[in-house]
Each structure stands twice: as structure tokens, then as C-alpha cells.
Image (tube, rainbow, N blue to C red; front, side):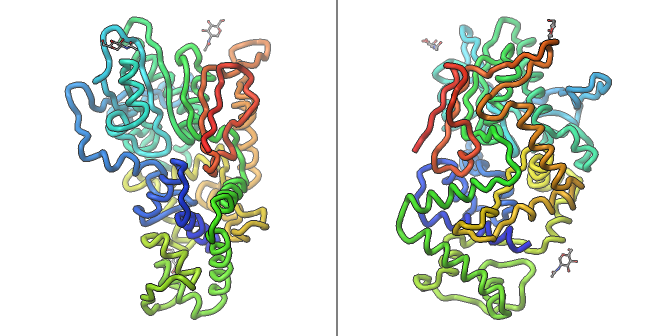
Length: 443
Ligand SMILES: *[C@@H]1O[C@H](CO)[C@@H](O)[C@H](O)[C@H]1NC(C)=O
Ligand SMILES: *[C@@H]1O[C@H](CO)[C@@H](O)[C@H](O)[C@H]1NC(C)=O
Ligand SMILES: *[C@@H]1O[C@H](CO)[C@@H](O)[C@H](O)[C@H]1NC(C)=O
């Protein structure tokens, strides 16, 4: 499974260019700060670091803190009356600092595939600013299974069956219903989120317009895709657009890495340079600061702290743990990709600067070995997801409550994305079916 790790190296190389897009910055900062990545995703998620700096100052106060919500385990099976209680609860965070008597506006930040925290509702975030402008109550809801929100006793494959975006959307609806009940007078809810949570915020508005008045959806991949070749394609276009030596150096470096893999000396060099686990062999220290003429060292220099496990069996073992302790988000997000979205950043087009470093088969192997979900099933799951949410071009769902199959078109959403963001390949870009769906593209 060396391919996967070469990709992680390659993606990190993007640091040698200045990309103003927020997500790329997030990605790069995380790549520097976090020692380990899986599936091109740093442990803890892409955006967690945005909040980490603020963490120390963020303490509960009279107007802010966290609470627990009793949540329904399965929103689609009325014979399952199980709720999450005591240790099985859903966590949310609140900030009433800006709320005043006259305002009935609520902003709900959807936390995606990561732990939520109080820093999500305090600090210097755009939606905190919106809350202050609107005198709104601000909330952040942790996604089921992530962080401390545990709908099941453990993470066995059987128990992961409630980990779906559709259940998460119903969690959002149930949270709002419970809050409305508490608050009595009529409330207005705006849901916000980015990336996968951006998709959840757009979809929850689509499915529950009776509860949610509108949504801000940032960089949301509304199109599910198994072989997400557009990710690296966009990265390559970005590299070319920005100009300079970056694109060609990356190509040289990856070619050279390919060559080094062929010989014992070469593998020893790679082991040392990239702190590979397990070692290809015992290694001698390479301490040459002059990286100018060595593209492979340049590749390493842009991401000095990244360490990688190149042992497939070992990685499978690591991701097969069913406990809630430690970092569970890699297992959980991998499951979500196998079970609903795909999103496998592959280099299967073959003609790019990335060569053949990252076949989508490497992801499929993980799905198969860890969850028993094979390629055919993943493809079916991805199609079912697109079918259900109506893909990005329609942004519509079938009204399942209607005897005639009636299409519900989404309204009141602002979709935003950066053109240099590799995920923008799957975001909604054009053809709004309703005037109130606005697409904002940031160069
Ligand atoms: C927010 O509250 C302030 C102070 O009570 C008030 O002046 C302002 O008009 C309110 N803003 C909104 C959008 O309701
Ligand atoms: C890879 O990991 C497995 C499981 O931990 C282990 O048995 C095997 O020895 C490892 N291979 C190498 C080359 O370290
Ligand atoms: C479905 O339709 C019925 C009858 O029109 C209505 O009472 C019910 O509230 C609807 N349910 C949902 C979830 O919209």
C-alpha cells in the first residue's frame, strides 16, 4: 500500500505554493502540525486545527457551555425505540451571549466528521459574527459517533449501521424540535457547515424546510463519486495556475521516488527521509540541508513532521478497533466513504503529474478488508446517495410523504466554494433551479 502514502507526500508538496483558499491553508497547516494521515486526511479532520488555537481561552461561562441531548438511535425504524441515554448521548454546545429577548433567530453549526467543542460557538468565526449581528442563539451539534456522541455501545461493523448522513440529518431535525419545544414561541433556524457538514446543512434544509429557514453551505461535496479523480486534477491545475517551478519539481520528485523504490539503497533513503514505518531497512541519517538540487528532499522538506505507516496489514488492524477510545474519526469517516460517498482521491486518470501513485483500488481494499464492503457495493452505495439527494445539479429530493412522487426543490441556501479547493470539483456550481439558491465562487 505504498501508493497511498506517496500521495500523502505529494499532496503535502502543495505547500510550496501559496494558495489563498481557506481549505488548502487548513490542509497545509494540519499537515505540518499532525504527524499522521490516513486516506489523505489528517487524524482529527481538516478543520480541527482552526479551533485548536482558541481552545485554551474558551471556557464555559454563564451564557455558554455544553449539554447533552437525548437522541433517537434509529430515525427510520419506529419499532426501534432506543434512545441514547447517559453514556449514549449526543453532545451540543451553546452560546447565548448574543441572544436577546426580541430575537427568535438561531444559528446551528453542524460539526461534521470530527469532535465538536465549545470553541465552535465562541471565538473568531464568521458564524459567531453572524450570531452577534442577528442577536441569535448559537449552537453546535456534534455528529453522531464522533467525539463524545455515541449512539451505540461500540463501533463494531454491525453497530455502524446507524452511521449515515440521513440519520445525521434527522438528528439535526430532532435537536431543533426539542429546542423549539423548550422555547415555545416560534423560532427561526439557520444551519451552517463546511465540507461534509456543508452538505449536511444544505440537505437538512432540503429535507426539513418546515424546521430550517435557510442554510450556509461551504465547500460542500453534493455529488458523491467513487473514483474522485478530480481532487488531484484540481491540485495539478492549481499548481500550474500558480506557476513557478512547483509543478515540474513535484513531477520530478515523484518520478525519483518511483526510482528509489526499486533499489535497497533507494528504499533506505526513503525510509530515513519520510520516517517510514516499518523501515525499508536500517537507515543512516540524512542531514544535508541543501535541498535545492534534490527534488525528493524538497518533497520532504515541505512536510518535515509527516510520518507514515506503510504497512497495509498494520493499518487495517489499526482501523479495525471497535472501541471509542483514541482517535476514532479515521475509522468512522472511512466507513462513511465506503457506505455512502466514495470520495476516493485517486490518480487513476494516469496522465497527471501524480502518475499512478494512488489507485482507487487502495481505498476499496480498505473498505473490503475492514467493513466487508466490496467495490460493487461501494458503487451501488454511491449511486443510492446521489439518487436520494438528487445530485448537485438538482438539489432536490422526492417528497416521500406524498403518494404522487413529487420533487422537492431546495431553496434558501448559499453555496460557497473556492475554485482552488480540490473539493470544489464536487460542489454545486451552476444551474440553480430556484432564485434563492445562490452560488458564490471565490477565486
Ligand atoms: C440586536 O439587538 C440590538 C440591541 O438590543 C438592537 O439594536 C438591534 O436592532 C438587534 N438586531 C437585530 C437584527 O434584531
Ligand atoms: C506489518 O504489520 C503486521 C501486523 O501488525 C505485522 O505482523 C508485520 O510483521 C508487519 N510487517 C512489517 C514488514 O513490519
Ligand atoms: C405527511 O403528510 C400528512 C398528511 O398530509 C401530515 O399530517 C404529516 O405531518 C406529513 N409528515 C411529514 C413528515 O411531513
